[in-house]
Length: 172
Image 1 (cartoon, helix red, strand yellow):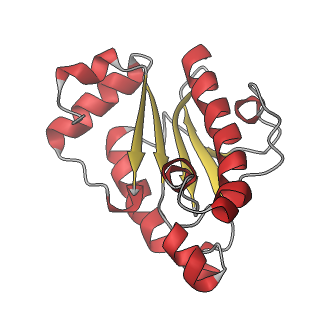
Image 2 (image 1 turned 60 degrees about the vertical axis):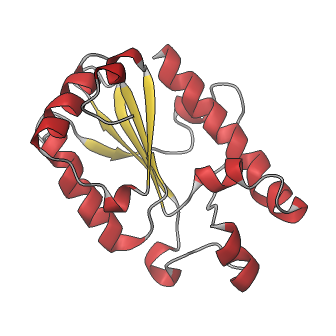
C-alpha cells in the first residue's frame, strides 16, 4: 500500500521494509503523520548499519518531529516483547544468502554488530513507530521453508517476536 492511498487508514498496522532507503515526499509525510496520529502503527524493519540509520531517522523526522515524538531504545523487558511469548533478546536475523555464504549474522560487519528496537512515542507514551534495526524479521518469515537450519536458528525466535509486536500494536 502506498502512504497516499486512502486504504492506509483502514490498516491498524503497517510494515515497511528496507527503511534505510525510504524516502517520503510531501504528500506521503502528511498522510503518514495523519495515519500515525489517528492511532496507526508502523513497524520498519530490515536496514543495516549507521548510514541506513541516519537516513531513516532523517526521513522519519519529516513525519514526526523529535520535540513531540521522542525516540527511545526499547529494553527487552518492555511489554511489546512479552505480549504472548517471552522474548529473551532482539534477534539478529540475516538474509539467508548472506548467512549461507558467511555463517555470520551482521550484514554490515562491525557497523551492524547489534540488533536494536527503537520506538517513537506519542505524548501518552504509545508506540507509534517501531524500528528494528540491524536485523531482518522478514527473512525469518519468508525463508522458513528454504533451509531447515536457517528456520530453527532464526524463524522460531523471529515469529515469536513478530507475533508479540503485532498483538501489542493491535491492543495498545
